[in-house]
Image (cartoon, each protein chain N blue to C red):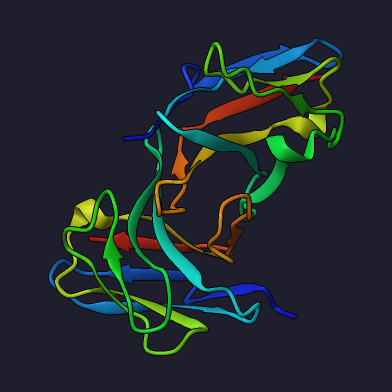
Length: 111
Length: 113
């Protein structure tokens, strides 16, 4: 079975502060991890995926297989980063590519 | 290229009524999904399809049925709506193989009175 845990329902920071949204997973095989973002009253969209190793809108995330984590980080939060963030896992090699989502973390960036 | 579209955007039902939500995608994706989004519960998978003519149950399938008669369409049906089905419903599609992102529709806000 695969599981994704986002321990924080809500994260509140001030503009310019560093942000870290936590994501822990459990999966016995090789996972692919994603972060999706949902801005107010908009559809979910992909923010980044671990295989791309890229930085999007200043966000980065590193897959740590030892700690089974895929935390999302940004050094200086902006007000426009306020949104709902979902971590998702796709298990590779199990024959099914159905994603498992965490429950989401709401990020609020205050001016 | 419209991506993933959902019909309707909003709907109010009375308990016991039935309705069908339509999801359409024009990206030739094999996989399609229906989720519900509730406060504090995140996204929960209702049903999914890995190809035309196939469907499978997700995490919370009770009270819902689905059909995938055409590759581009994925229908979600509520036969007898209940207040517990008040939610925002999202459809998504993907190529299906690992590493491919899901593309989401704009959502349908359903209220069951």
